[in-house]
Length: 606
Image (cartoon, rainbow, N blue to C red; front, side):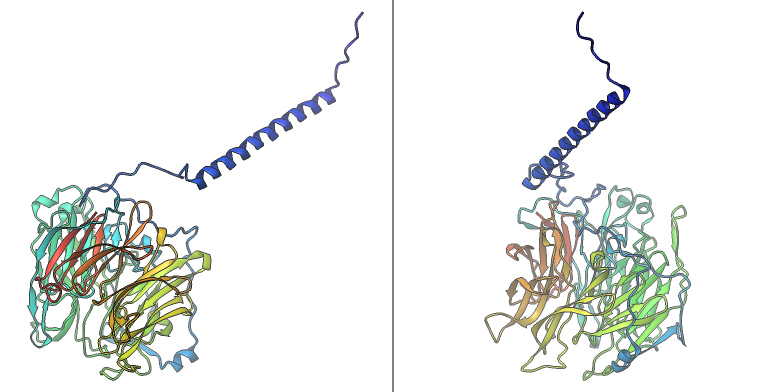
């Protein structure tokens, strides 16, 4: 008889099964780790690209309905809490600045004000879902003049079309031609259910992907063109007044245009002043105007160069006045698409008036006046003024939260950056010399970074600028993304150039956004009032488009400032372009440069 095999006990069998399962788990875990290591090496070596998809280049001058790839933006893991506010400045500090303010509801001065439905702005990329560029700087952060990405850049700028524009004789206030500062066009691809309602020519009402350029100019007219061809889409609206600032389109996609008057005129009633207007783009007529010679203003000069913002949830228009008033008005808009009508029933105007030490309405003082385009975050409006004060105002009760003396004319305004990693927002403010501290013909102009919740200055970059010519910054900075992440790009006029103690000229400059240290600069004779327009290709490579007062449009590599190509537009450019995909639109003055007359021009970026 052979040897008898002993049967394992049930306990031993359970132990064996457990050991087998444990061994299998260890094997699977080791395989997973090996796969992860392999994948990581492939990613970092460039062999595998995350979320890689085949890209289709944007057709030249295309205005079809295809959604463009979003412009690369800095990664934001989280958004700042909606209830986050700013820190109110101490009353003693404000008193030392000589600050006081008044509130008006229409013509009546009031002790306090509380908005019935609160205003709220989120991040700039949430300002509008409209396809296009709808206000100066594109959104409530004033952070972009472009919509969509470029196809592969080959280094060409080509004129696609141009439209001549005229001039307006304003008597003692001069003759104004072409488009001026800030003078950015509005570009919009109308939605399918809005397009048939517009007051455009019949051929465009049913055109899929119809994209329209809306351009108020200093010849007293609002011009309308098809983006692709430059063909007139509707008869110009003749306002009879100089429009040199930048208009705004309703961010809800409603056919409403908001625009201010840049040079005073006399109304049919005999009032000498300037007006702000709301225009129906269904009927092509003015629905509302306000301003004139506002008795609440501390300044005789009345104008509205500031580009408006619109708070969609509360149906409220926000506009800064060069007369030193911050205006808000709830429009009570009714847009009936079935009936094809749009109406407004505006509430009374709410006005904020301010005063600081040294402010007055004469040439020897710091001037009242908001020429910069107001930026906004949550319930707060942020702006710089002609006297050099940066102010943060709570729009829901129209009270000042803090003020910072930037020591210069703040026409360029403020750009906002939301930074969840720092639990705050940052403000980038640029200004020009106002001549109050001039020595040897020069004064200081500045670019600054501030903590937007407290007003604390993080760094300052100073420039020697012409006091006589108001040298410095006329345009806001651009906060880089993609391969330009970590830098800001700015332009200057009539500032001291390197290597020549006597020369003042134009400058395009990149700074480290964390420290203010200079990264690169481009210097030239002609100044730059037009904002640097930064565009990105689908890989996130940034390019800078810069117009100048010599009539040139130049394309630069954003990473190092090297020039790629240039195009002569024939006369001085003070306006800022807007870019839709690979099409740029801008107007010229018709003076200076190589001597051509004023035009609006569409340019292919190739």
